[in-house]
Image (tube, rainbow, N blue to C red; front, side):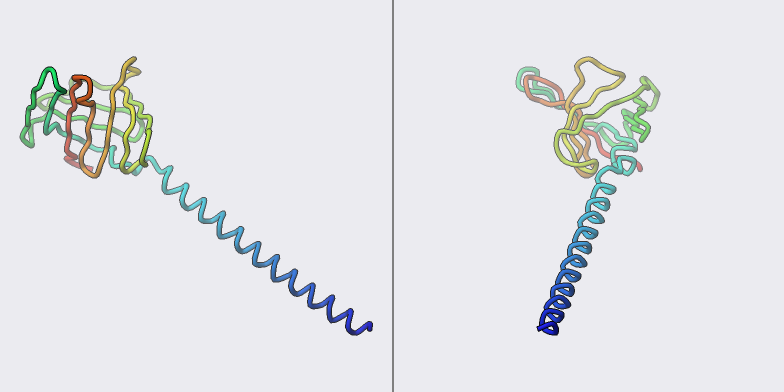
Length: 153
């Protein structure tokens, strides 16, 4: 009987070791995946927002009803930097500098919708970034939306 009990103990120990090893490997895989995913999502400095954006179109909501299109090279530009500073140009000349803050409501740092404030503006504005198009504002409730194209990285 001693031999049979010893075999059972060895078999139980082997099963326990395999289970512990499997659990440890699974835990390691999950932790690694979490760190890798978080690293990619939180890398704000690689956001496509950080470059120059030139106005291509301005349109309004239902009451004012205007729609203006701008050619490339018009000089009406926002430049956003990864340190949360910006420069605004009109006809190629600096008209405003300062800081900005964006609260992302949906999406990621690559494509998002959210709320945008310049220089701690009380009201702020909506902002959307999809691929190489940046929209600041909304045409809802007779608002204005300005559409920008990326002009450099």
